[in-house]
Image (cartoon, rainbow, N blue to C red):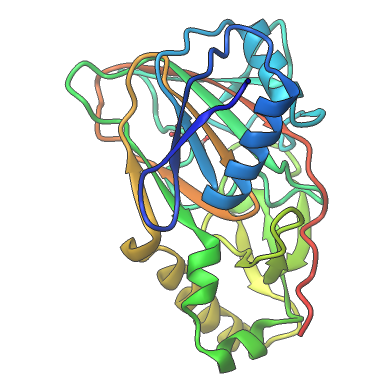
Length: 275
Ligand code: SIN
């Protein structure tokens, strides 16, 4: 009975979900169909879902425990006063920067990065703008040559929150090492897990080799062939999988306002891909 509609929005990443009302509790079949769609498409979009923070938390909790953002106060988003696991992303005329302008996957600097994030926009700029780009890390992996895949498999890279967040604060940011080629725990598909926002170096390689190889990977990851661009409307929701996608927020709407609330769901350490 409780089926959902899944409409792919591009060949590699993103699907719009229909026939669901997120202001109401979900049925087990709906949660299971969304998990399947999330692993497959990487990011799910919902339209016209005027949820409040309680409903947002209840929706996120269907997929796991809620993650509390690591990294202190050097971030453009701020914790909600009532619910610390909710990040308020409010940008306007007086903002000096916004969250997520550099390609990244959320909190890869954490030892256990959040597996997914759910962002609900409540105020959007009046003349468009403020879109978000998403990219498939499955497709980026698949497009590497067999020799490059072999070379990268088994290597790890270091992710440092200080690279992305505001260095003007005294916060000590998390630093963690993760496999460069990881396996998605639900789909078994391989993916690239380094990002321009937080990855600082490839472990066990000299700096020159690490810098050159990382720059190659960042440019490869950011190619438009495996991207899509999401145009927000009021009460749109994006639910992205941090394991197999990256995203980038576009700040082209200054001096206008954009307000959203984001909740993250706890994950597991990215599993190492076998050679
Ligand atoms: C983020 O959470 O990284 C920002 C995404 C967005 O604001 O579109």
